[in-house]
Image (cartoon, rainbow, N blue to C red; front, side):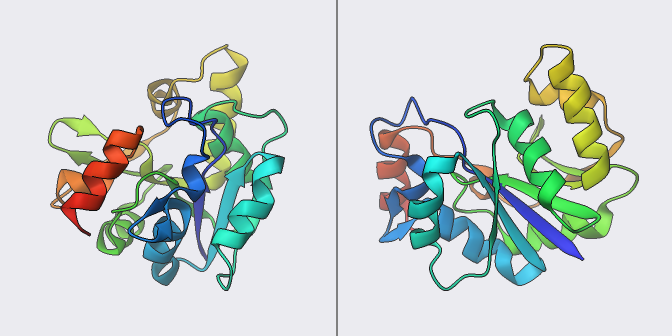
Length: 194
């Protein structure tokens, strides 16, 4: 079984007053765009979020089969979200992405699942690793997140340091792993098309 965990639990402080997960890009909520793009290459979708986000995200995902993994401590960062989401995911390997990455490509996700060994596979786009577009062995990710958070860190690089992942050069354009952090990013994404 292949799982996907979509991280949506942050407070989106750089985005403004609206929850970024349900902000619309070309008429669709960001979280819906991400789920629609990965749904065909995974067997289950788990959305990691804060408790108060469940209802609006459920509305945004109306008609799409999904489960929630609610953060016990709100806005603990992506490492905490990975831990929470991977605890709920049923697949041995889980694709982890963020709700603000609406251009993720199903082909990239499939390629990462195919390449995953040991603790997973992470794409390299240019000279940068993209840990929020990676496939991880769920139990290893939970253990690495526990250790990382237990040492007082919430850095994705510290999480990766505790995992044995394959690096996969990505032929996908940078756009495939681009995230939307601000309203300006959203406006630029709308004007650039899908």
